[in-house]
Length: 197
Image (cartoon, rainbow, N blue to C red):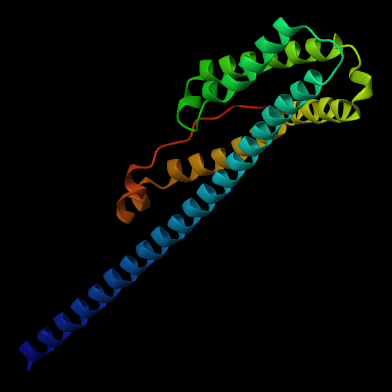
């Protein structure tokens, strides 16, 4: 009788232990799934913020090209400066950083300096072109280019805001990311523009 009681007590303890272990396993799995959803959401938001920023930059570069085309329709313009601006415009996107290379802040600085040089030269070409005032589209393009250039800081800050949340999620949940396996276990932090407004 005593042996039966001990066996029964042992069975109950084992059952409780297994149930507790099962509950802890479920909690860990649920937390890992929650982290996966968070990471995926941050990553999607980062991707959208990046695409919006690049789309705006591409439009600015296209507007510069169109503005130079307007200059070519004027009565007289500096052909040397014009050719130089057109060459810079064509080469600009090849100098642009990406989401990995921006980790080297010199890449961002180089691209920004190249963009500034192109903008200055383009505006010089426009302002010295005779008859540009007869091309109303030119004035609209100048305004659009200026607005897009001013928006760069806003787009970068928006990207940084999402990147910081993504990075914090990675930093705070290494165990869950490891449990999720690839590609989550080898995710790394995103570099930042570090724009402060």
